[in-house]
Structure formats: structure tokens, C-alpha cells
Length: 564
Image (cartoon, rainbow, N blue to C red; front, side, top):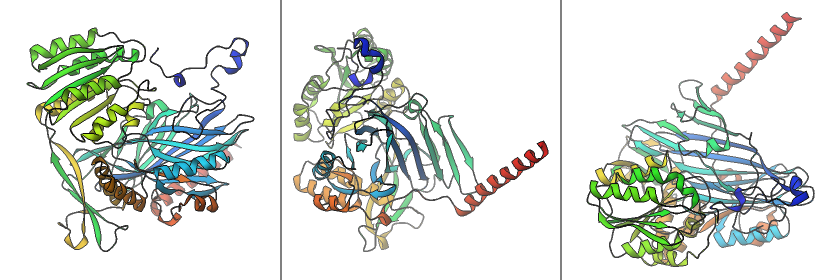
């Protein structure tokens, strides 16, 4: 009715009890052990957060570890901490750690149903598990239980293998992960500690992260970000690279037998769709974005057949099918500006209608512009069936205006043709960039990875990088196999994900408390020596840091002595 999810608002007034309950969260957790984040729980909060990472600019990849500590000040009840995390485009979870009695325990990777069943069984016994699964493209759901009562804490670490996004062969950028949805409080003065290092100069797009150099081969950006700063669309790390170095490779330790993963930078273009239909969310919060969207629509390429649907209480055809031109785009933009956004609207029927309208044409596209979708008021099965039965027939470009959950995309996880557009700035700029790419057929640069024998390496002018390259290659193969809809390929994709220890639409990661629990679940935790890690600082860099500290202590003591 309002367009706001219930867990984004303070609890309602309850008379004389208002003072004790308002802003404290809900008491009972009916979603414990499930796959819904739900409302903020009373007494549960994020106590500490740090993101450590290393970047290989010429290798085109990065690895980051996000350590989270949850705090429960409730007196009498154990809590399950749940959150959704937005990963950088193309990133994949490759490590999960839980601290049990001060010791690090590594995760077991297994089929999605298998790890969830193991997690739920242990939750029922009130023991110590943590579970990570996907919940849409580039999104994961994190669950850990129990956060002990009376100021108890629970500490986890999520390792993520990330491909850089290329602006051109000489530069790229690395978006940071951030919280989309959560059932715990993040205090207003809370800060995430961020620290990335590289062997070439890097810098951040936000002033709160400062850059530094400890010599010719150690560079860093570090600092503290508020939760709102971390989730900003334009928060990223700029990564210059050698524009002449177009190849990288790494030994595939999993495949063995002299296999390598070969990566090339190649130029590609995005052709305009044969037909395009825009679906505009009619929820109240969308009203603030209508003018920006209208201006973006005026940049549609000429001669593109397009239509616009408005998902309100009724599905309204704002613009019937027409060819894009200066004389048709302006009236279309005006129709968007005049639209009335009210309450919280369900876009699923409009998306299904849009699919039917373009499915007869190959290379058709739906662009869905919407606010966060925190609640499903209708089933997604009809829409999912369409994409499953005609994989690749229609592309759905998902563009979300603000940070928040998207229950629709969660239900379409793993389907071919679903593309979530990574936000990098203002809505108008990001939508215009998509349309302009179609209009000019502007080339852009992408990484292409393939497996080959080591003795068949095409060139010696290539950068050797880490085995994270193998993980990125495997993740791409898994997604391609799943998009076919073939059951046999799905099983092969599951096995590949287990071999490379990856969280995918068909696999997850779970940490249990004891070896007996792993054995009962039929799962094997990853050996600690084989997990990816953020590289330690160079020895000489540590010496420089220690030297600086010693010098500071000496100067401080001298100042104290003089004062005395």
C-alpha cells in the first residue's frame, strides 16, 4: 500500500509500550532457517566489518575477503543473522569461514539442497552453522546461527573472486560488495574498514578511501566507509593497467595434467534489439526517478521499434509500438513524466505481458526500471516458465533505482537472458549508457577465458596470474551450462562447482560446528591449506611500517621527556 517494505520502517506504535519497542526491532523470528531476510530483530546488530583485498591489474582480477561480526544484546534468545549481499558483476564466492571457539573453520561446498538441509538440521539443534547461497545474479544470501544472547558475537568471513570491469585495455575498475537487505541493525555511526593492495597504483572514487604507496611495488587504498557510502553506485576502485598486455594465464591446479586457463582481452559490440519494450515500475518511490528516466528515453537509437508499459494498479500501455525518432521519443518521455506512481506495485504481470509481446521476434529485449522489490504479491512461475522454455529468446535488462531487495530476480536465478545492470552513477546516466551502446554500436572490451594445454599457449607476451583465474573460468562454464536448461549439463555444472569450491545457483557453502555434523550431512570441509587467501604484505613493506611505528614511539618519548 505504501511502496515500502515493512522491515525498512520502525515498529508501529503500541501505546504505553511504544517507548520500549520503537526502533528496537521485532521480537520473534518466524523466518529462522528459511531463505527470507524479513524484519530487523531486536538486539541484533552488525558489530564490526572489514574488507581486505588484493588486486592484480594486469591479470584482470581481484580477491576480497569480507569479515563480519554480529552482536546480540538480547537477554534470552539466540538470533539468526541474515543478509543479502550485492557482489561485483561476475564475482563468485570461493571461501567461507566461521570462527568457533576462537578457531577458524572452513566451509564444505555441496549441492544447494544438501547444504541447506544440513544448515537447517543444525539450526534446529541450536548449534553453530553459517550458510551462503545465491539469490539472483551477482547476489548472495548469508545466514548464520546462533548469535549468542547477552552480548554474544558470531564472526564469519566470505571470500570472493572478482573479475575487473574494463573501461578500456589500459584501465578498469573494481566495484565493492555491499549489503542489500538485512535483519540486523547497522548503527548510524558504523563504518566498514576497507583495505585493498596492488603492485601497481590504484585509487578510489570516494574521498573516504585514501591512496598510499610504500615503495615501487606496493600500493593501497584504505579507509572507513559508512554503510551508505559503501552501497553508493559510484563507489569503486580505479585500476590502471598495462594497455599493451592483452593476455594472462594461470595453471589450472584442479584440472592438472598441464592444463592452463588462458585469458584474452577482446573488443566486442552490443547490437540494438530488434524490438524493445520498457516496463516502468509504478510504485510510489519511482516518482522521484520519472524525470531522469524520461530524459534517458530521449536517447533511444533511431528506427528502433519500442513500446512502454506502466506497471500500476492496472497495466497501462503508455506508448504503443512505434519506431524511435525525434518526433516519437519526446512524446514518450512526456508520458513517463505524467505517470502517477502510487503505493507498492507488482511488476510481474507487466513483465509477463511484455515477454508475450516480443517473444515472436529473436533478439528482443525488455528493460525493467524499478524500485526495490521487497515483496511478491503474485507468483513468478509463469514468467520463469517463459524464460525456461525459450532460453535466450528474450533478454531482460534489470535496472534498479535504489539499493534494496529484488524478490522477482531472486526467483529467476540461473536463467538465460537475465542481466542485472550494475549501477555506476545516476539513473539517467546508467540507462543512457545502455541505450547509447545500442545506438552507436560502440565497442567495449571484455575478458575471454578458455582452458588449454600448457604447451599450446598462444603467446609468451602474457602475464602469469593467480589460480583465481581458474575459478572465474569455471564459474563462466557453470553459468553457460545452466543457461541451456539441460538436466545433464546441470549435473555437470554442479560437479564443476564442487571441484573448484564455488557458490553458484546449484551449489552453496556451509560451515558446521563439528566433524561429526559434516559426516552426518555427507559433506567434506575444504582443507585449510587449499583455501584462497589475501596475500600478506611484502616483507620489506612490513619493515617500513614497523620502522615508522618505532620512530613515532621514539619521538613521542623524547617529547615527553622534554616536557618533564
